[in-house]
Image (cartoon, rainbow, N blue to C red; front, side, top):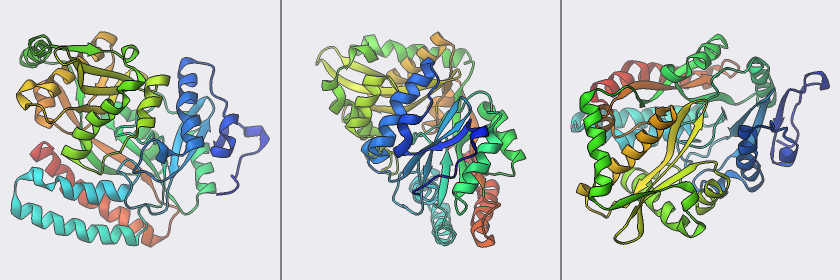
Length: 390
């Protein structure tokens, strides 16, 4: 889009910015505002692909008064990571996850159903989207309070992108109730996306398990390396540890973070990076990277050396450090999805996460695909996630 449709000078507090106007964004003179500038300006000027190799998208920023929300704009890009491609999330990645059901007949039936849904969703141009507050991470955290200018911002997006579906990812009732209420009033439909876990007050058994996990650090000769102790020479190893778990063990649908991503995170503290170093070999064997917004903490970077014996307990040690940091700082820990049994045993509670989808301005054929997906996931997907504790 060569030119943006901006509101009049009398309402300049609601604006859109792209890569050509990045330097004009009025970042608030606060710690969070300065951090946002360090994150967003390079992403706008270099392109997101420089930081996430399997994402092709146009990045913009929506200003709602003092609130700045990045958003991505796409047309097709069906090979994108699920953090930027609804098709990848609901079809490609979902098919890969069917093995967890351990029910061959059910897996076969659902696999064929997903093939049919995929055809329908492509016909409905599912990936022609504007995804608001999209940081291209597994979990997007939201401001505690909904901006009073949200409705005007949505009007501006509909004006500039009249043929795009508008989406807000990563919404869960236990964390984002005000946002869900506000978007329901704007006639968004809510499509289930995954089951996530939030650390709660652990019982005695969970406390014992966490303590046992923490004791593995000393038992196995590991020390915690904080952000300020890491250097640029550690970047290739940190990336490799993430890749081993998220891309090689789990799925290539996950974001392919580049060395530039890790370098920016380390230098600007856009993520707080922690690692586990084996004192015997002086080698980093695990990494996690987290960020916090309005008291909620989540960890989009998590990885360890999967070639080492599982009984070493690297995942358990890293998780115990993460839980410890959340408790020490009074942060609510959003543990995203995956490793369901492990997280439940250590005090996490499950919640269904949704994508809020606005398609009322689109043709009937475009709306139909979202409607069918909503019905199928509400009636089939959510019961399966809850029954199998996915």
